[in-house]
Structures are given as C-alpha cells and as structure tokens.
Length: 451
Image 1 (tube, rainbow, N blue to C red):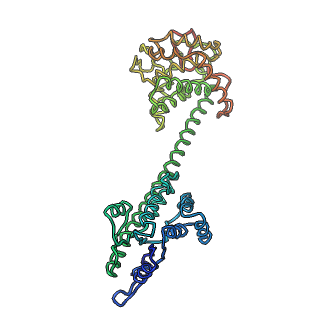
Image 2 (spheres, helix red, strand yellow; image 1 turned 120 degrees about the horizontal axis):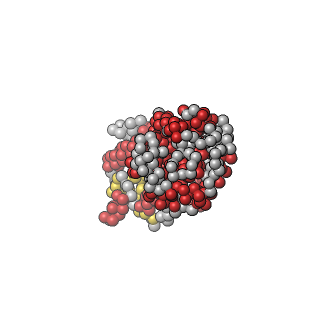
C-alpha cells in the first residue's frame, strides 16, 4: 500500500501517554510491516480542540484566521458559520478516520460524535433545524465521509447502543494490541473508501438529475415559446385576412377562459379550449372577400357558403401537434343544441362540451360588437338573447350558469381586454371593428345577426 493511500487519522484522547503510544503504533514500520497504518496522525485532547481541528481544516483557505476566530467564539459558532457554506466541487475530507476515546475527562467521546451527527442531519447543537437543504446534504457527506473508531476501557450496553446509532464503524477495547489495531484501521478504512465511492456516485447521479432537470426546463420554455409563436403567427395571418378579428378572437378566448373556470371545467383541458376559442375563425382564411367584407346581410345561400370555415379551421389546427386537441372543438362550434347547426348536425351532449361553451361566448361577443349592418347590443340585452336561445341553439344547463353571471362582469372583461390589446402591435395591424361575418347564425337571434 502506498503512502498516498493511507488514512489521515485524528486521534482524540485526554491522556497524553495513550496518544503518544497510539501515534507511534499507527506510524510504526518494521520488516514484517514495511508500510505504516496511517499517513499522518493528528492529536487532540478534548472535544473542543477536536472540533476546532475538524472545522478549521474544512473552513476557508485562510486557516490561521479561521482557527483564531473559532478559538475565540467556540466550536458552536464555528459550526454555525460552516453551516452557511455551500458545497462546490469535490468534497475535501481533512481527516479520514476519527479515533475517539469514550472518556475524555469530564466529557464523552460520544458527545463529539453526537455533534457531528447533528451536523450531518442539518441541525445545530441545540437541535434546531438548519434551513438550507443543500448545506445539510454537504454536512451529511462530511459525516459519512469520515470513519469513526471508538476506544474504551469499559462500556455499558447503553453506551454501545448509542455508538451504533451514531454510526461508529469499530469499537476497540483497551488495551489494544498492535495486531488488533492494524486490523481495525485497515477494516475501517476499507469501509470508508467504499462509502466515499458510493457518495461520489450519488453526487454524480444527483448532478446528472440536476442537469436533466435544467435541460428539461429549458426545453419546456423553448416549446412554450414555440407554441406562443405559432399562435401569434396564425392569429396574425387571420388578422391580415380579416382586419379586426384579433380583438374578437382575444375577447372570445378571455370570455371562454373565465366561463370555463366558473363551470369548473377540467384544468388540464383548459389550454386546448382556450386555443380553440382564440383560433376558432382561422378557417375564414379560405373564404372569399365577397363573403367576409360584404357590408349588408347575407342571403341564406351565402350563409351556407360560410359553413366550410369550421371544417377548414379543423384541418389547419389538426396539422399542428399541440393544437390537434383544439381542432375538434373548432369543427363543432357552430352546432346547435337542437341538432340544426353545422357541419355535422350534432345535438345535445353529442356536441363537445368545449364547443358548447365557447359557442355561447362567440355569440356574446358578436352581439355586443358593432357591425356595418347593425349597432352593438348592450350586455344585458345580449345576455337575455342568449338565454332565450337555451335548449335550441345553446345548452340549457350552460345557459343556467351563464344567467347567474351579471352582465356587468362581461362588460368589465371587455374593458380589460381592450386595455391589454392597446399595448400590443398585432402583425399587420388590426382594424377598429371585427370583420363583418363571423359565421354565427340563429333563427332566434335578431335578423341579420351572423356574429
């Protein structure tokens, strides 16, 4: 065994003669044993001096200054100071083995081990918890990274049980023979090296987990940014095609999000509902200018030519991974509860719940927004009109919930959306009013109202 691989031992005994004899034995070489048991032996005669040696050796590089401060303030102050230190880089272990006498005059070697144990568990000498979890991890490594050997002339069963609980690796009964000492040191050092190897592996594993978490967070932020860019691009394209649709889309999304929360709509499904509400008119990109910008009411045949926009919207969103769940909601947002809507004539609860929810919000915004062919309705009037369509165009159960929300609430939401939009610079700009035809129609709503 090379000198470099031998343990550095801190020997703690209040009897100088015992320390001297053990130090000579640990460093002794002979023809039969050409390699000593230890690379070095440091001696301490009390718990206090041992703690000073341990703490000052682990402290900042200016060890002389550290020792002076620890000596003035005591080991507890030094311990508290080190508890605020973070762990950077490989762990430095100033000593490999602590060889502690059970009896240290008026003190006990078990008290020293107990202080080290408290430090490893992230608590101070008074048992109070230490706040920093990372520092506690470093302290645990400090304790586990040192081999503990207990010397005693006699020990009670309770003392031996305490020693086991405190993690003592070996118990040596005095007087100790040279052979017993050599075997105990070799055995304890071997266990220590195995523990340190495991600690190193755990550190590498923890570092890898931290790196994976950081990469995962970065990927999540990048994906979120990509999603936001896609939404802005699609909404910007629609705004260019139909000036004013930006405001309508954002209001419908905001109304829908608020109403969904009032309904306790599943939180995990809200993002796809909000995406659908925001991009419900994206299919209008494929409609003709004659339909989109005609200033007066459309004839029935022309209204039918508006119907494909929900199918086209489904096709567009269905090609984008994270928007695929929203595509079906967009397809069915013009279905009527009585089965007379489009494109599939679904009725009742066969219509996706998300579609039923934001169809009402689409109607609310359509009725309360000025159009070239009619002025906006007041929120109270729009609310009454939607409730009048319960059971025919809209889900009666949803209408019941909608009816409990004051009209002033929706008006306040509209004001908040307008304030948000004033801070934006939409791609291609936005008009002062929504496009003339959103595709909303109902025999129950006022003549010419197409949303």
